[in-house]
Length: 235
Image 1: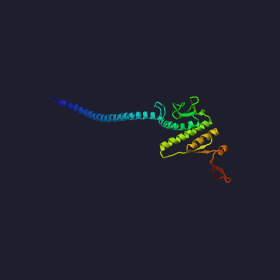
Image 2 (image 1 turned 180 degrees about the vertical axis):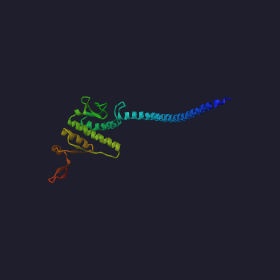
Image 3 (image 1 turned 90 degrees about the vertical axis):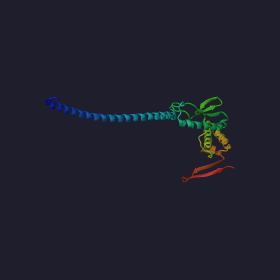
Image 4 (image 1 turned 60 degrees about the vertical axis):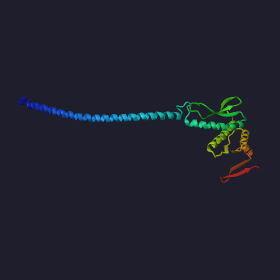
């Protein structure tokens, strides 16, 4: 047995160890709490990482699709909207050439210009195939009368395409504001179209043109400032 005089020293050591144990126990509790917090944070980070990866996949798909739609990624460098309109333009040109060939006496045909135009997107440009030279030309090189015939042909070509997509809708008439070049060319074109069963209305102030139109609605301003109209039709 230990001497009686050593008991106080042993009790002091025991008290010190007990205090140290309590301190370590408190620290252990704190470490355990911190560990749980770290584990929860790690789980949250893992969840966010997985969600970010899934979003990155979705973004990559959306970015790829956007590239095709906007024309940045497709081979033609043409936005989807212009591509679809270009397909309709092909149909319009095909129909328009049935008129343009007749009106130009077989010399000209319109065609869809391929590739980019300048620094912008291409896809909706039109050029002219000249049967006399066998070369392609810009529509800007046509004379005023020829441009009128091309525009008129495109208008009726577009009406045919609209009718083909709209079913029961029929577009048998068109109104043209004056501005064409040769009067003889215009009258020849309008007569050809009229014989095909379509109605063409011309808005004009040119007296020579008015004298060659058999049926018209003449509108004039009265002295009171109002407008008056009269239908004039030759038998």
